[in-house]
Image 1 (cartoon, helix red, strand yellow):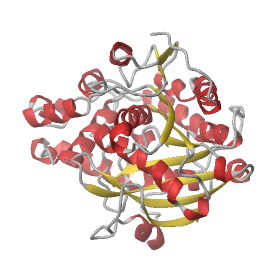
Image 2 (cartoon, one colour):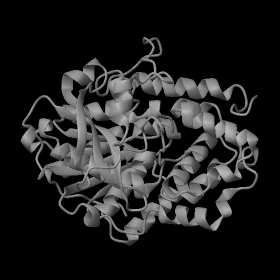
Image 3 (cartoon, helix red, strand yellow):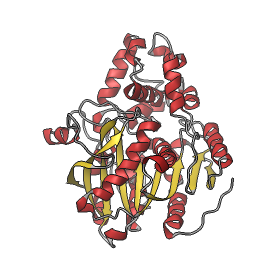
Image 4 (cartoon, helix red, strand yellow):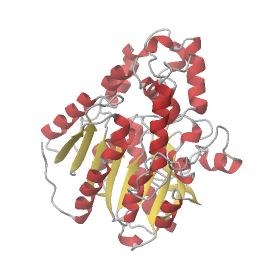
Length: 415
């Protein structure tokens, strides 16, 4: 066992689970993938980005003048594997957004528009991807273009219903990556502005008056909830009709405590990188030699599979000279990114698995109670499953909920 790997034996099962999810992404919406199916497409190799990719993903300096959601650049892309390409046209985009400290930044993402139907009346769903990892090669838009996006079935389901989908990469996916994983003050605006960028991309042909929804699972569930909380003040022009958040990390402090020493410790490391990139908290200054090597390798190479497989069972003590989590600056960053401080003005569907080994279930249930106390029209559902299974388990209910919201049907609540 080296500085990165946890106990032997757990890695194989976790990798197989991720490979299975990636394999599901290769089919059309709802297609079952058998164990004997052909292997899924390989993830982008380390260092495989060519000069054109690097140039496209590198934010211009200085940033151009403009408003959040304005498109900086775009180029045609693949909507995923062949089944997805039959459903939609796609473009990679770079657009203006706002970072966790309220400053302008540039974010990349993907706009997918159904080939069938009237684009001028198509609804737009802002889709927040789940965990992809801190390395440049892990950007969701690159995974989609390579046919390796593990949430592709959910995207295909929406495209098949005639909905446009705006997928954000979140902040920081460029050749010198500075991702802000689970930092809601960054991921929320990035998701909102992906929708704005889709509406402002001339080639997409979408309407500025289109019905809009936000949706995501895990990191994406947090981003969707943050987008819902921020939208009234940040993007009041959007015709928002609903929000779906599954596996929501609403209280990062409680989520982090549950990850330390557990199977999902790599997610805690990724979150520390994200918070440090967002707020400049001095992470490198509290790492030991082992920590500096591990975090450098993570930033250079690691995607979701490595986060699951290579750090299980590790703890803060393995990588730090002292824990940064008790420092006032870190506590302020955690507090600033705790959901529930505001209401969400549109109906919400929130779901969570009861055996969640990565995103603590109780803090999500507390968030549900907080929203209910604020009068949010919220539907809550649980599934008896683990976190990875939740990637797929909530898809049908999420799709049904959004179908009703887009159709204008009244929402109920089980608060």
